[in-house]
Picture 1: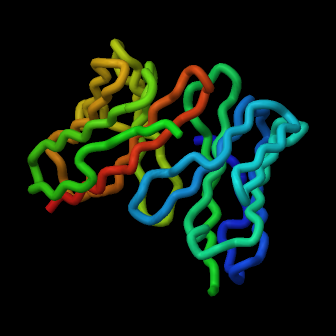
Picture 2 (picture 1 turned 90 degrees about the vertical axis):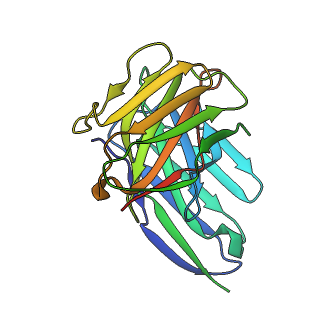
Length: 111
Length: 115
């Protein structure tokens, strides 16, 4: 099925570093969602974006809905050990019920 | 944020038995819920869309007679894995769509192991 192109697939960083990941698509989306999944748990919603150009923050996390409506990025500032996990982007096309997912970005932090 | 619960969180069963997994939205009425399956180190794979009061819509390749879905109320959907076999062992996750803000919230998942 359709998927979003999420990159990078994995990141290995030092504690305190900033992190950036993004998702792109050839399709236009009306909603972009960013989730974090810890091992053995379900995804937890981090940020929801509903308008092109929208920039939203949640603590140290910032996400933006691209102007073209075909991309989104998530930034994490000053990473800490609990940021470790897999981050997924997901999008909704207008009129659709089903989410389209990115492949995930696995974040590993070296203390 | 909104809360979606799943029960049980894990289950071990013998081959040939059936297992029922419950998904509840605790903060809002969910006309639509979704059931996903996730294999290790992979993204979520949508199995079916569950609409309250109507039949579920299954994704291509998902056997509707094997994975029975019931969405009898606005806060509860169930997935029954019938005649489970070891290859059905997986992590099953539900989500509920909050129609007011067009966002999906996920449950904590259910780990199914079929011996």
